[in-house]
Length: 409
Image (cartoon, rainbow, N blue to C red; front, side, top):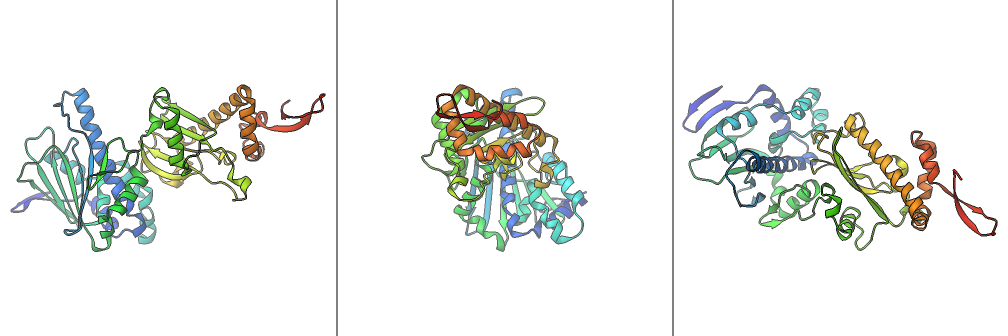
């Protein structure tokens, strides 16, 4: 529904959007970081789409670097997230910002119970896309220029039930600028250090440059999606140090994995040189970083590997895993379960190969992590025989010297 006014054409949000916006505008403080994560992810998608059009649809070539910029204006209390991606036409603004078309948002609404406290707790479990902006803003303005359109458009809403669209009235380059007029209790997101923390936490591996007030934030390369032949030992070591926060330490070994069928994922796993449990620090709970299309879903996912392999560091990224997957849904997700099975098998196969090809190196590993590995005998019945073949015990030989023997020897 729309009406012509002097302030542009007015539209009423879809009923489900009104419900969603009301909840988001009353969101809990600790969930607000996902608003920035969602907007950065949307900007990255817009850049990917434009790059795809240049490669496949004959779109005009553009030598300008595809990038995302985040600019806080403390005086005006406005936070801008901008990209030079595909942009949107007037109709795309209506289709994309006026109706729910994404399963994550629909599932989010389906789980809402009417209990304000419980419903708010769901926010962190679902990617609610553009509408998450209203977790931070009392008004949102979108300026956009599609690469297929001659003019720019302005979309504006205070999130209370309607929005307006009109011609921007000025020239702007291709892309989209989302301006958040922040609420008084969200002005912390104007501080560059706060923005840097959130972007680094969730969007470090987005494949396009992200800058905050002109400073590049995401310098770390996502080496797990690159061919093994193009990653040097030094790059593997630096990435291990990044994940483990152990500067100048080299991993005992690493494992670079990828799968394309029947599901797709990439991973890099590392074994540290020492076991902190032997130093009296209690049980190690590293957890792997879990990403969906290079965007962090969970940074302490301990369900990706069995408990007895808890000493491993690493990152797992799957394009088949939705960004909006909740922690509770992980164990029920078919793709997730298959990834866990593949990871476990590949780690055990790698250990078997090391044990056969480099006995000294394996002895070094087992001296540190043998106690953890032994737990697999009692807990992992599917791989019990494989784990048993990896265990080593002290024994005597005819020459009177002590040596290590496997459980199957």
